[in-house]
Image (cartoon, rainbow, N blue to C red; front, side, top):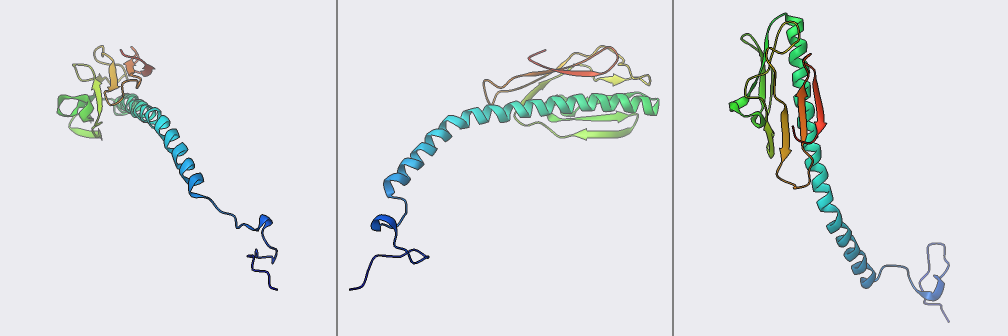
Length: 164
C-alpha cells in the first residue's frame, strides 16, 4: 500500500496531514483589520503633510530673507524682495537694481499674508523700513498649525508656531 499524503521538500509528510496556507476567512479578517487601521491613520497623515507644507513655506521665507540680507551686504547695495503678482503665495523674486538674483515658485494650497511694502535690505544688512510678519496657513486641513515669520531690527528672520 502506498502513502498518498503529500510530502514536504525533505520527504517528510506534513504534521496533521494538512498542507499549510491561508483560508479565505483569515484573509478577509486581515484585510478588514488593515482597512480599519488605514481609516484611522489617513486623517492624521493628511494633517502631518499639511503641517509640513506650512513649515516648508516658513523655511523658504526665512531663507529668502537671510539670502537678501547677505546679498545686500555682499553687493553693498539695496536688495528688494517682491511678491509675484502682488501675492506672496504666488512666489517672489529677489532683485538688486536691475539684476534678478532669485525667484521662487508659487505655494498652491497655502495662504501667505505678508507685509504691504516690499522688504528692502540696505547695504548695511538692515531693513529700510519695519516689516510686518509673514503669516502662513492652509485651509486644506482644519487642525494644521499656522506659522509666523518675523524680522528683527537687525534684519534676521525668526519662524514661530501660530499666527502673527
